[in-house]
Amino acid sequence: MNRVAAAGRLHLMNPLLTFGVPWAIVASSFGINLAVWVLTDAGQQPRGGVAGGVASLYFTVLVIYVQSVTQVLPFAMGMSLTRRTFWSGTALVAAVQALGYGIVLSALTAIEGATGGWGVRLHFWAPGPLDVDNAALQVLVSGAPMLAFAFLGVGIGVVMKRWGPAGTWTLALTTLLVTGGLAILVTWRRAWGDLGAWLGDQSVVTLAVALPLALAVVIAGLSLAGLRRLVP
Image (cartoon, rainbow, N blue to C red; front, top):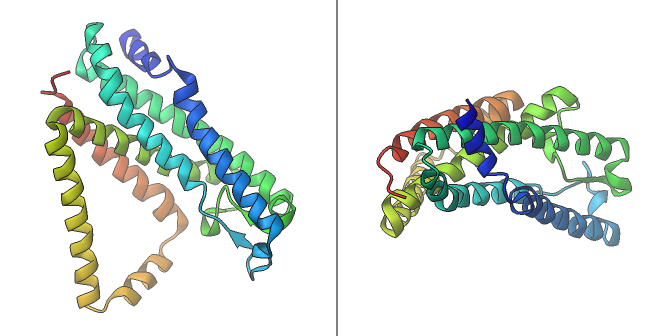
């Protein structure tokens, strides 16, 4: 357990990068959105103004975890940490970080609700149906997708480190072809309406908690398997 904790601490050696950059970016996005809402009538929409800028926090965390694998793993193996120990420490940090970020986002959402969207009806920290009016559930709704993005970053980092540029481009092309193929299939079947209705019938717990957690588990298993023969 001590070695797992040591592997986890490797990700905290540069807190300005690990935590400062994601929050600096999302804070910048929030400031820009707030200025737009103050200067325009965006908040006068029927349900108030909804912004998607909080997504920048999730994508930045994804990039941080890509770098964690590509840059920290060689250093960890140089310290005689095994690949499994490095993965365990990374998973531990990702889980704690997702929970912590979920708590912070839940608090910001509560403040946003109490202030009427910062006085201009801006719904930034939990836009649309992601605002569940329950602090504990809000932690899960905001934190579970964060865990999925963190492991997605780990998975991409493993591909980049093990298979290099060829693997990275293959992953990107495969992702494009799979998502594009699904879009073509749904369009050919004229099923966009049915898909939208099905999504609308699902609860926010299913879409924002259960599915991200399931995705995180799948990617975690794949990334662990990919690490086994990785050469630093």
